[in-house]
Amino acid sequence: EVKYEVMKKALRTKFSYPEQKTLLLATGDDVIIEWNNWNDKIWGVSIKDNLGQNLLGKALMAIREEIKENK
Image 1 (cartoon, rainbow, N blue to C red):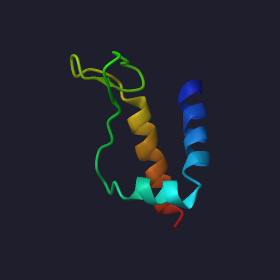
Image 2: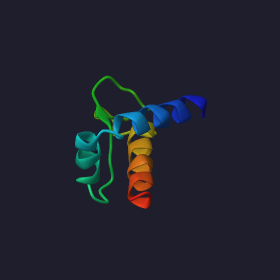
Image 3: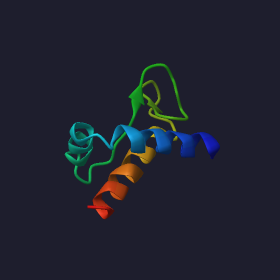
Image 4: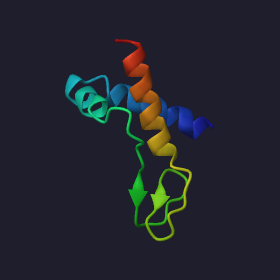
């Protein structure tokens, strides 16, 4: 939980820049999946077996929602 909250804090900083915010908002309501080939099943989803928690994708979608709510 702590690492997830730290990641969200870092993403808030990253997406406070207008260019980055525009790119994230351009994803609309699409599901964001952090695909990877190094078998990370915590932050992403492994392309080897299609399994993973996708915490980075979930964090990105949460930040996207925060940005939309604060417009």
